[in-house]
Image (cartoon, rainbow, N blue to C red):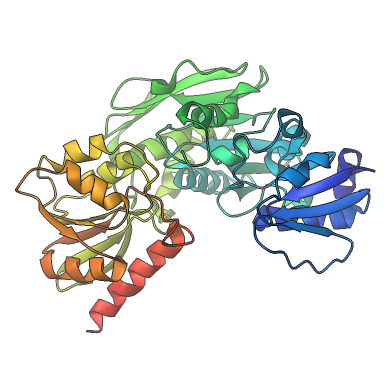
Length: 438
């Protein structure tokens, strides 16, 4: 797509880029190339060092209030708005996701969910490429939606991983939408869980009659004008798995055909959803399955780190909700040490407390801040509760008590202690590798 086709959206307008992370920088690059705005500003909580003197920097505690006067507010994901902008200003928000979905320069497969969206998106792209369908993996996976706009045409399929932040202000939906699941998450960004769930559901809300949605049956009803299919783990649906086989639109795919290095039965659900999306996009299911062994999984997602003194160390730093921690423990036989805790966002840990009280993990190490609250729920004396002040202490404690496997699956966000879950996971891996040299 020629970026000059974007000019009608920005010509002669006063534009502010809200947030100067990855997407903010792509916004500024695009606007600079278009050279058609009446005014360009960048607003961010943190001080800004902009190379272009024609671009006005706005920073400090009142940076959001100053956005009210602009014709367009180009929001970056992760900028907390809640009620800090007027409804009138919110109506002028434009995101990269919304603009891409509105322009639709190529076929777009969108994937969202609290957990599993990165693995599922990557699998879809892997399957399409195996079938000879040109694809690109963009969005929340680390590539801003408009970053590869000039490479998009009708021969390409864009697999777009979508966070709640990217979906919050959209008024268009992808050609094929996957809604994997919704658990309480990011409640520090939203007024309540309902607002978070509503953002996720936008992935299907604005579809056309010719579009498709596959959505978890636990989330019904789903508002969409497209063709709706259901998905599930452990119960029948249009797309489902019993934890052994996969059932795809009435066709059974036996476990003998599912040759994967992905660990955990929950990943069978992700594989099923990826196969469904690929099939709806015209891919051959048999070819997809033949390519499955070549897919090695993603960093920080049940990632094998090392075996030291007979003990395996596994990095699942992506785990930020209790349901994911339970799935991680269930993915392995014999996890005898679990590291939990991180930023306390006030979500309920009751389900995790009940799970741990069954004695499924012998040693549980609790990190601040949420670890203290989780620990209070674990009352079974069989569980050896260990408190650590930081990751280094946690890994050292784990090395002394584990006999088979140490699993970092924090069930908590990393913020306040790390910049993101990637930094947390890499720190864990570094500490583990240091153990091997001791």
